[in-house]
Amino acid sequence: MRQALIATIILLAATFSAIPLTAATAPSGDSEETISSATTWDEDGTINGTLLIESGSSLTINSNVSVSTGSSITVEEGATLNLNGDLVGAELDSLLRLQSDSSLMFNLGDVAESGTMRLQFDHQIMAEAQFDITVDGITIDAGEQEFVDFTVPLNGSDIIVDFSTFYSVITHIESVSFAHSGDTVVNYSPQDISYERASLFWISSSFSIDILGSFTMDTATLDGADLNCVGQCSIAGSQLTGSAPINIQTDGTLTITDSNIAGSRTDEDIVAHDTAGLTYTSSTGTGGDTDAWIRLLSERIIQTNGEGIKVDQTGIGYANYTRYDETNETGIVSIGSSEFSRIVEWMDGDGQVFAETGELTLTVTSGWGTFSTTIAAPHTAYAEVNVSLPYISIDDIDMEDNFASVNESIGFMLTVSNKGGSEATANIRCYVDGEDVDTAPSTVTVTLLPGEVSETPVSWYSYEDGLKVITCKALIPDILESFTEQITNVEGASSQEVSWTYKDEVADAPLLIYGIVVATILVGLWFFTRNTDDGEVEHDVEEKQYVEDIEEITTESDEV
Image (tube, rainbow, N blue to C red; front, side, top):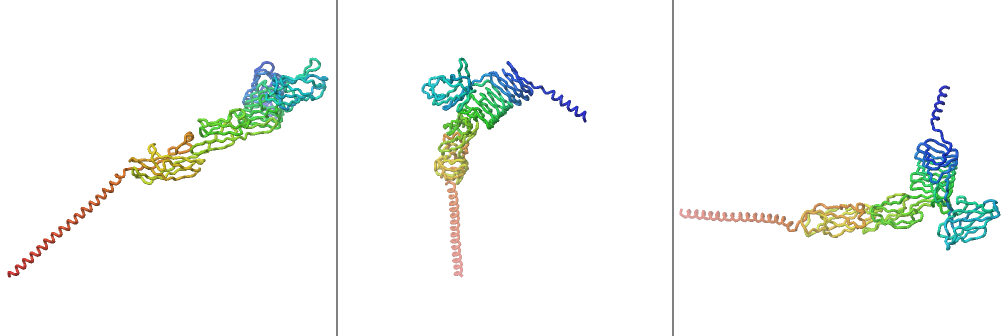
């Protein structure tokens, strides 16, 4: 038993000894570093170039690592980057965006009795602007100035700078400096300034991080990064400065908890693209005019069921747009022509969450009527929306007979139903071999609610003889041509075959019969009359013979 245990321990030791040992020190100098195993950096270092974490491997950073400008970190799918220390860009390029009532706060400690404070703007303030700055009761109008100077106490007292502006141009503080005791100057970069009702704005990132696998930050610092979450990102209890916006791609996710984001290169700290997953809990953002997060659609394509549909849009996107469009020849309309119109959810700088409540009304106006459908604007990159239409079905033609006389009419019953979803008033015409025929009424007009059936008596006139079949179809208005298959049975309905003949031809047959009957009667009468005359002659002959016989007998009797 004891020997088996010893063998097991030896086997386990051999197994673990085969696992590559982790590096304890980050690289320094120019590098193209590849991580191909489980690796931990416990010592400070510098990334200056590219860092690739291969699939199946991981890198854990517990130290302070500086990242040179232009460097990149790529985490492949199936790889992991764990940040428990600091990743700090070597050059941070930020501004402090002012609002109309911003305040800045400074306290340098007791360094001198007084000194000169300079506020450096990112442009020269226009002369007509209202741009008042007040420090310790003294107000200066900054119109036509690129910077303003104040004499301020540097004896440990708080220095409060209050702005009161009415100015259409976005204005940033580039830096604040304090000069005292001869040549001594203390500079504050925007990210070092304490402020209220203002926001950090980053001009550019120092380096990039592309997460195709997974990334975790736990009580860590990330400065000056362009963070792109294609895979899974998790941030907890951490500080991100100048590392916004964080982009979460369509299939990526981000969970951020108890963390702070300060400074963004755009108007939002986090951008969730399309269906990206985002969980934002107990965290704070840049604030001010910078939204904590937005959901941005890559496009807003609406596929409808026809061309020329009017699409009225109200309350669309971040800016609550109202506009009008029409569908193209393939039935498509885009309601996301601008980025603002593609933002469908957001949390503002004060932590309030909003969602677009826009509506789309799709309308087709035609000779059959006006068909309209109203829906909530879809919060997806692609959606299918159909206008509710009628479906006028020509169901049956029931002829009263199979024979008809030319130049006269024959009646039939036309049955029509509406199998669609909207009421319509449709016109119906009838044809023989594709040519219009004379009917009364010449055009059958029906108004039908969905599910309703109508029967209309129709008279059909023909001016030529022959075997004919009548077909009735719905007349399609031009505006509805692209919907034809959706709104009617194109082939219509056809009657049974009708034999059209001239009336004289129709009379010949019974007259012949009548003639034969009359002739038969006359022949019969002739024979009867003849037989009667022959009987009378015989009777006369017999009667004459009888008289002669009597006379002969009488003569003979006299002689005797």
